Amino acid sequence: MEKQESSYELRSEKVRSIVGQIPPALVRYGTIILFAVLVALFGIAYFMPYKQVYSGTITFYDMPSTAYISFANDKALTKIEEPMPLIIHTEAHDYTIKLISIVNERDTLNRYPVSIEEAQNISNLRNRTFDFTLVESSGNLLSRFLPKR
Image (cartoon, rainbow, N blue to C red; front, side):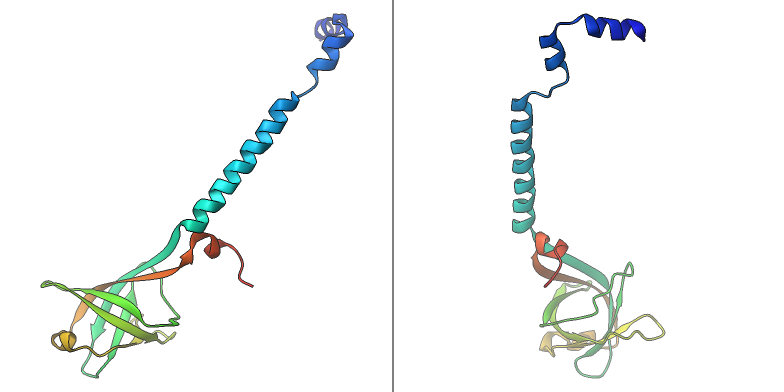
């Protein structure tokens, strides 16, 4: 320990003043680079769309425009502001119907009652259960993380 202190004391006054300083160019360019990276990240988050994908099963019944949805992975859509396209996957082909509303109360089988737009092409789906995919697009990624006013 004494040897290190004595070697430090043997250096000139100029060397001792330089040893403890960070170069100003490194501070200036480091700050600029850090700011540029943050601006780039915010720009990417602003232009990247945010899409929430829900999947599960849908069961149709005899009543017109009424069905029950059961979501997979405990990720449930509980509020619909405007009709959303719901893609139903069957063996023959996929159907797209409009989901009008969802009731935020589950039954004993963990299903949510929903209202769908009546369409002619789904009449053969009555009293059956199918898999579905629902994609909710809600603005950009940045608006998802910033608090709403």
